[in-house]
Image (tube, rainbow, N blue to C red; front, side):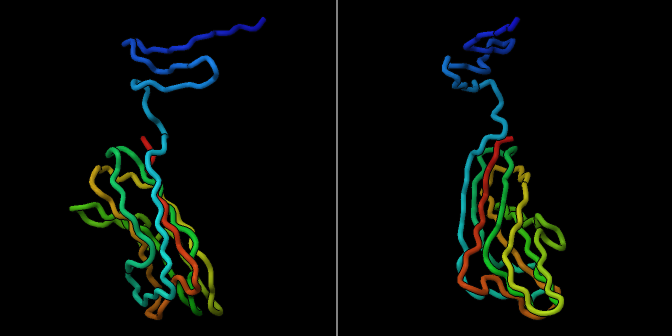
Length: 176
């Protein structure tokens, strides 16, 4: 024997609408139901400068960046950077990271000392793309700027965008 429960409305103990069904399989979450995991904003920016270089062993701003104003302080930002081309000569590292810079505050390296992406050439030059991603818990409603930073392990130059390609940064704000 099969049992079915058919309802078009589910309320909580305070009589707040949690879930409403229109009878055809479409469900609407009520205002009392928490908005969990919803995409709130998606922004993207392309960096197309060819031949950008750095010789610094400290992280230096280089590559795509974008600004976003969070919908709430408890949302999260999924920040990803991909594409482009990275040129590294013999026995050199190139490290990429993403910084969060909040208006009126200080910048935070989201990848730590070695960054979020590391590219190494040990016998000859190496040409390749970049792919990095981080989920940022920002804790603010102030404007945020996410920026790419690059550094090398030696004092010799490393190059991003060695050929006419583009590096893309995407920021997706997700509700808590």
